[in-house]
Image 1 (cartoon, rainbow, N blue to C red):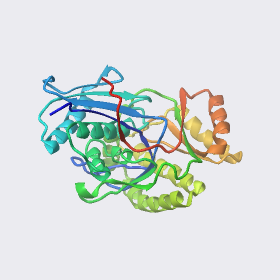
Image 2 (image 1 turned 90 degrees about the horizontal axis):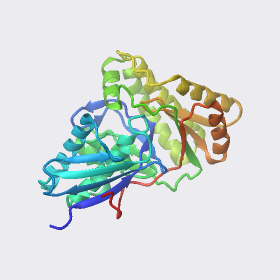
Image 3 (image 1 turned 60 degrees about the vertical axis):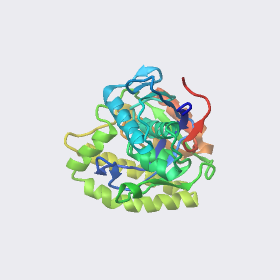
Image 4 (image 1 turned 135 degrees about the vertical axis):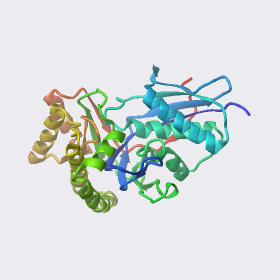
Length: 331
């Protein structure tokens, strides 16, 4: 049968229009469509090997043991791949991630995209991008978008076969657009994205308003990307992020993902706009914050953020490529 081993690399994506709430908790079908940009400087590499040498699935991330709840998700995903491929063997997996995990920087989007590609390839499957996106979605919703590079829309769909991501424009489309990712906290969140969106959907009085607005936001964001209209992209992304957090804050119990440093950066972005530096913020579920800007302003924005003294690290990203198989294994 030969070696059943493969390695893939994938990049996390930043949701410009957020995925927030599931229509189906088992299949991970979303309540709304979403749009993202894949980021180039952050990555996850995953090597997967199926072998009769293993009597159970084992995995590490950056050499460390994986928490039990994450391991359960990984095994469940490997089971999906085994069931589709007919492979019965247990697997060993190793992941290498070059950015903070579980801190609102979308580590599961690149993690599951890389895992799905590596494991399905090791199992002898030869999936196209659409099939990969559908399969990856079942492990982590947002990972359906990291299968592609550039600007990506995850179509809501009403069944598993209809809910997948598709590329709007590739990573070469808009090189001047930049994302400045500011880490103000490396602590893992008390409530993760999966738990947070369920609480917001079930308890926030603003959730129905979120759904009403998001279809308009999707249309505006598609237009902003196609027209390379930075002002429209920034305004819509910032407002969409605040609407999502509005549902989180108004949930029972309230989900406040921000820390004081988060708010300080938000206020600094508003001040920069007053000072003639066009930039916009967006946040996923976590304290860390992204600033969208054009290339020409990155240096000035960086200096302003560094001057606040609250950034533990700053990552500068352009649009990155989709998930792909690489030759160099991690073990």
